[in-house]
Image 1 (cartoon, each protein chain N blue to C red):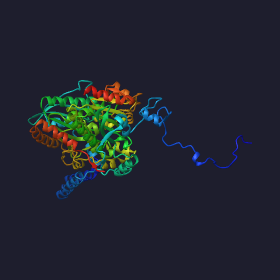
Image 2: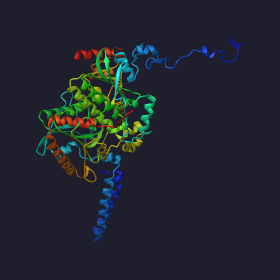
Image 3: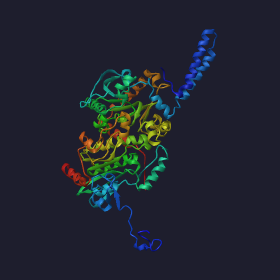
Image 4: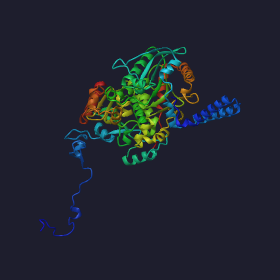
Length: 280
Length: 319
């Protein structure tokens, strides 16, 4: 005889009595695997409250963290990738862009906007990793260039939040030249004496590291981010040796002198506005 | 041993045939000049047909030809009074990038370029032309020196990329290249850049921001090598030819896309077939440009350089 026995067959709970668990209420920390409540996550700036792991977030989340009352004006939102080379790999690039745009709701891998942080004006360009690995093609380059023009014209400090695998292969040499383009614009920004803050987040590699990400008046990074020029796999294959522990992390890059400091995302807004105040 | 690529086989076959006919003619003392003339014409036609219609991948092969002239060869052929300068004043002297003052014609210039090396020993010494951060920093130091003494800068690009190594990362490969891009864009003297072999990615661009950027006819310039592109996008090394086509990396493609300012023609069959002629053509181009660029006011020069790079890229604007 069974210990428990159903006295009626079938499910007898009425629909209105069923407990609903909406999607996305909980999330698992990718590092410590502990469950994180969504509302707590937002309050905690998407940093795990148990292990301080900085979750990968998108440009909208960074804007909400930085701008007062999440109030900002987006710049050049309507720029989209053309397909100047008619590039086809496993699928045509033109199709890929449309698919990714539909899936992510983004037009490309970078959002630019201006607003106030702690009452101070700031222009921010923030990369979106979900859009083809945050890769830099013509749109990313052009949006950064225009955002810098905006900064120079109105004499507003400028910040880039990098999160990218590097240059976008499907735009080949066009992507490569965006490195020169963004660096040239930053030279003009620098000449105008306007502060530029570069925040490197997980991951920042390739052509992005080899251009605007490393050119800040201050380069700062979130803890534990992968930061490098060549990817770890490429280096491992080239030198045929295992890589040292902690290689190419923010802490490693700080230790070698290429970052000014590492910033916890929960203090980001304070640190950035403090810096702007000090140099203004 | 001479290197003959697959696509050059019909030329080699014809050449062989001509040699044989000549031998027979000599042995038998029979007049075969009519046959020889015909074969010579055929050979010339074949050479034209093949070398003027090379695919992306064939250009990549040509750019890597073992006897292709390299930076130090060109310096020797084009320049006089070369003084090589060493070191980045911080870490060491990178052997993958060489540079120094020299004269080209009547002008004193700073000439800088990648050096790959020609045999196994040299290639190891030069790290196959893959520079470490100190290479880019040496290049920048020399460019600043040129700026100080108001001398034009000439760079010769030939690399499969900046070196991906542990020390390179520790010493800031990304920062070194980025710094060069920024500084070159505002350098107060004329800069002429020429891709003489391979132009891969940031490693090439790191000495490639100039008022005039050229590619020799049979070179390539892109964001990544066709092999690496194949391995990333198709997850196999077998699609390198397809990748070479897709990347539109030839001098002709790059000029069409307005990413370079001009193509410098090579002697038929490639630069290695007549290095002296190649060097003379480059020298002529460089002298023309120096004359032209030295006439410009410094502000104007820099402004036009920045404008040129800022116009690169294709985007769609609209909702």
